[in-house]
Amino acid sequence: MPVTEPIRIVIIEDEASIRRFLRAGLPTGEVDWHEAENAAEGVRLVAQKNPHVVLLDLGLPDRDGLEVLRELREWTDVPVIILTARGQERDKVAALDGGADDYVTKPFSLGELMARVRVAVRHGSRMESIVDPIFRSDGLTIDFSARQVWVDGSEVRLTPTEYRLLALLAQHAGKVVTHRQLLKEVWGPGFEDSTHTLRVHMGSIRQKVDPDPTRPRFIRTETGVGYRLMVG
Amino acid sequence: MPVTEPIRIVIIEDEASIRRFLRAGLPTGEVDWHEAENAAEGVRLVAQKNPHVVLLDLGLPDRDGLEVLRELREWTDVPVIILTARGQERDKVAALDGGADDYVTKPFSLGELMARVRVAVRHGSRMESIVDPIFRSDGLTIDFSARQVWVDGSEVRLTPTEYRLLALLAQHAGKVVTHRQLLKEVWGPGFEDSTHTLRVHMGSIRQKVDPDPTRPRFIRTETGVGYRLMVG
DNA sequence: GGCCTGCGTCAAGCTCGTGTCAAGCCGCGT
DNA sequence: ACGCGGCTTGACACGAGCTTGACGCAGGCC
Image (cartoon, rainbow over all chains, first blue to last red; front, side, top):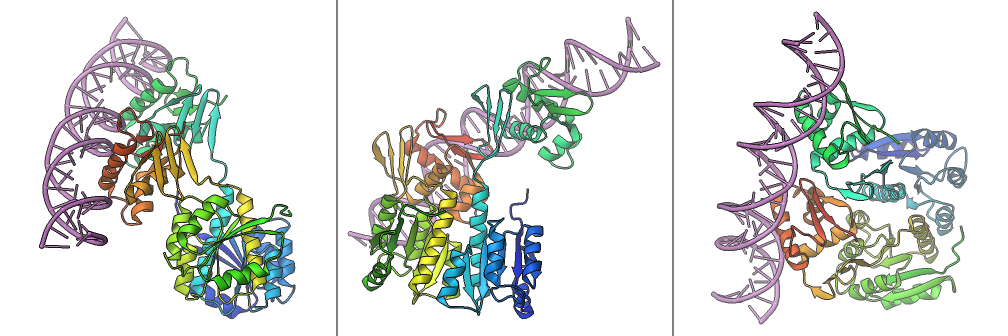
């Protein structure tokens, strides 16, 4: 899992010179950049790309920027940073109260703009990560964010390898995960043949969560193929 | 969504004239206004009032504003709007990347500021994760705003590094915090491999709050992964 | 029945992570 | 200059975790 996904930005701005200036100054590789030069195309692009941040010019040729903002706000909470030459207080207040998240007046510095973009991304991501992912099935509970496992309510302590194996099975709950898959994911490429080690580890996992392998509650072995975590 | 409750604002600003100017211009009845004229009082006030927004001046007499921001960010996500005369790009970027939510340079217009306050309140209410400035669990108490720690009622004195480590664990109470995470947060990027130093510090923390690591009350080591502060 | 293959268990050995002690370094205040 | 507190670094012992090998067992095939 990559730690730093590139920031997806949609800019809605008619002046090509501004777009070019921004595009040239972007940190390469960290930004996924999409340009629209009018309102209609901009809204379509936001819907299509689902960006982390939208940069919106107020002085568009086909429609007023505030209208575009209002239209976006009908269906998305994506952070919108207004990017405009209009520096009057009433414009700012109207935009901010109209749902904009920030307001930057031209001319602006690229560094400041990118810092404000990062703030907006921070705000956006914080809302998504409220619930932490938990796996439940029968008496087995796995809290991935806490890296904790319970069986019938009592906590079970797993070693790093054991946890990674069990988590991998849980991520594909109900489906068979092959030996090669498990070995490659946990030990890395080049260990696809250490199937004996894998069996020993599965054994110790079972000892902790599933004591009787002939009558398995959770982990079923699919002979010759791999293992499967059963779903209730 | 109309905010029925008045907006609670804490302003940390040494210049009395600015405070007076703002206080005079506030819409009466809609704002619950609290003033601090230095950093120490400001942090205390934030902890006490649990405001919707904090207005923070960077040029305080007793401490640098960025430090104050960093200290606040150790325990609260309350929106912070920087309010300062420093308009250099590097100041703005440093503050915004340091956890600030907005940056307004003096002289500013009152209308714009209040609009930005409303944006901040909007952001804050959306995540509604009001963090308690006091952490309690079993016999362990941590007051983030006062940087104080108690075990079974008696105060424990921690060094700066020890406190930051323990506070970090408390912020993710119940969850595993990896070695890399701890090292990066406390020592900064580039120190992710100094795991030995980390162990020594964890040792001295334990000596003070959790004398027997084989039967831990609070800090459990997750071998090969990191540490976890247990919750009752 | 004998053989092979795949799987599970157990024990032993080894590696590596961990905790602790002590020494040395640095910054700071007296 | 000196002492002190805090941080880092090194040495070392201990234990947890991982790997490896031996063995028993079940099922399929000749």
